[in-house]
Amino acid sequence: MDPTTVTARVPTELLARLIGPLHRGRVTRQDQQAIVDTMTAVTGAPFHDLKYRLNATGDHHDLEHLVFDHLDEDLQDRLLEHIAAQAQADPTPDLRVLCDIDDTLRCALHDDRYPRGTVYPGVVELLTQLDRGAAADPGRVGDLTFVTARPGGPAGLIEEYTRDGLADLGLPPHSVLGGSLLNLHTKAAIAERKLQNMERDHLLFPECRMVFVGDSGQADGDVGAEMAARPHDHVVGTLLHDVTGLDGAARAAWAERGVHVFDTYAGAAGHALRLGLLTREQAHAVAGATREGVARLDLEPRQRAHLEDVLTAEEADLRIG
Image (cartoon, rainbow, N blue to C red; front, side, top):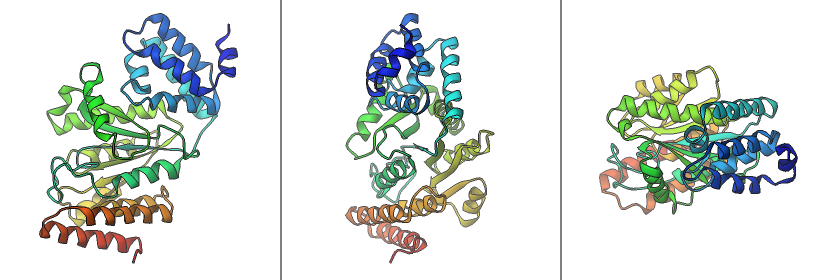
């Protein structure tokens, strides 16, 4: 039967559930052909929805894994061409939210303002509001992706470990783009892997805009600036968490490259508001969550005094009193 006839009658949720098991374990040429035939028979908004459902599987068997790890080159090219054609035929204002993990979501390496392992106050609210506020369908799955140089490991075990660490934070549905063991040795290698991950995300979702949330400790500013400078021009901006003490001149230089530095997530919300990614009400919700989160932390007096100062300044920038 013609795949077009079948897919026209089958909801995308069911199609995603049927395709998913075909790229787990060994994927035969016949399985690959069936996947690509099915996906290329879907067009328009249903095709975009199918992509997002395949990308929000809750494990490492997501859309990126399917397209770049399990398809032969000719079938990969065919599917990517269909993705590009559908992006032109059915553009969308939706926003892809790409976010680093270490020192962006959770205090891990360079930041001495918080106890190690702290989930930064306000970060979950920011990611939730970006995911809700920018999408044409706020309830749609799959807008949020964590981009890391952490390796995927055998059978995606380290990516699975990363997902498990994110599971209880109250985040929207999300996927994880990882790295390889060779990516962990230098900042340049880490940056290159993150760039590759972001470029892959653009190939899979060329119809969408993108915002990157990173930190100043591992070349994330360069990654965001490089993506913004590329000719596809879909990166709205980069929000850069300062964990290394950037001065005013450095922050101004980053801003000229589309990289907006912040100290707390109230400051990130202010930048997102100015970029048109959040409403004022959403930005205030992020600032409120940041204030509440800071109040709950067990901090040394020096740490608390510093955070109170920068948070108050960033709240004032949002005119919160």
